[in-house]
Length: 384
Image (cartoon, rainbow, N blue to C red; front, side, top):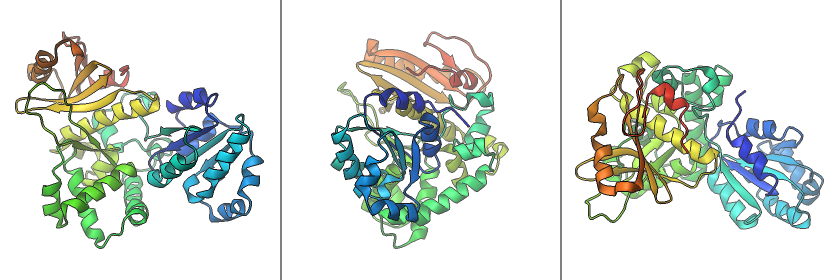
């Protein structure tokens, strides 16, 4: 059992908001988190059709009778419950409800319709590096291959089995719930092609050509992957500096274990020599920054930078300040790592608050750029 960083935010905000809503991918640990944060709250799972039918017979009575705290899992399966919760908290602001759901579109639609101003929405992604710190420092390859789904770590289930089941369930259930697939094999090919492009700029036309569908279909499928927390797009960084900037976003997955599964990587040793190793490591780091943003409700934004001369892997914008990171899968420091960071400083000057290199090797030393982070040091890095 792992203490989730989001738990402290849930407890803090429970004093202010009568309703808290938690969304995120399936198997990311939403139910476990809620039960750990609120052990005295009653728990109901609306995935269970019998429970759902019983509650549906008199929703208002059910909601009012659990005013001292209840966790309602997969709340989107009973849409009427959102209006009932709205009425209940309007009657008595001391009532407390925790709603969860893995169907981001359905859940957030009902939240906006019925609970605007009454709830705060959280996103729980799979385990972060910080949350796994009690495991000790494993190799970068082990972290990347195992991925971060809680079942892999707490229940010691083979990662291949976990991601195979997740992949099959996702295709057969979640995707077909959202879109009508005429050819499931085309969608499978699409996901495999995306996995082979993590850390790369998204070219929908090229993918459409390879899959044999339209660009509009590819864009729809990517939107589905985003809303179901399978993949996300990292936007390019723009400021009006008269540069010819790249405008296409980069594609990443929310879990490197799923990427390794899709790439057919069977163990950490295979990953160590795989041509995609650098891209998967970049995916891990970028996603861990994303988790930090969600876990602590931070307002900073993440980007990458690229023009016709240089590229920087990750920028974190906080107000007018920017922290820049170069991500390298390497065993030791190299002067070639810093070209993009130096270039960025020359362009943006004092608005670049810090520049750092995060790499997968074992050596560590301080450098002028504000800190060189090897992988073990990266685990302890304070991203704020």
